[in-house]
Amino acid sequence: MTVSIPLLTLMVIVVYVAYRHMSLKMWHAVVCLSLGFLLASTGAAPQINSVLTGIVHQIQIWLSGRRG
Image (cartoon, rainbow, N blue to C red; front, side, top):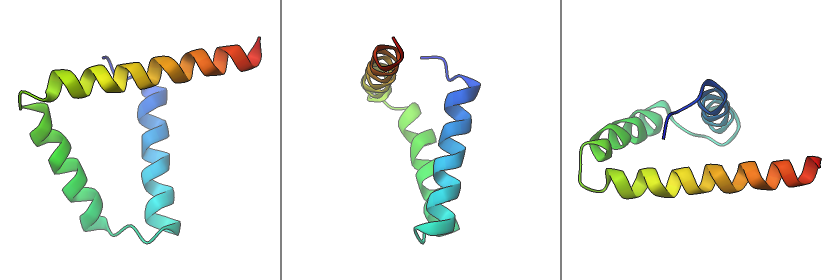
């Protein structure tokens, strides 16, 4: 799955809102970021990629159905 700029922007906004309004500490974000990098180099990476691709695809279908 190629990460698009809008998806990356959305994730940055979610992290900012969590940091600002949900008491997310900066070290929590750093730990999650580190975990993501570590998971990307494991054997679980293809399955995680598949799940995330499926979720993004379902959201795209749901949004296109709402508009049309």
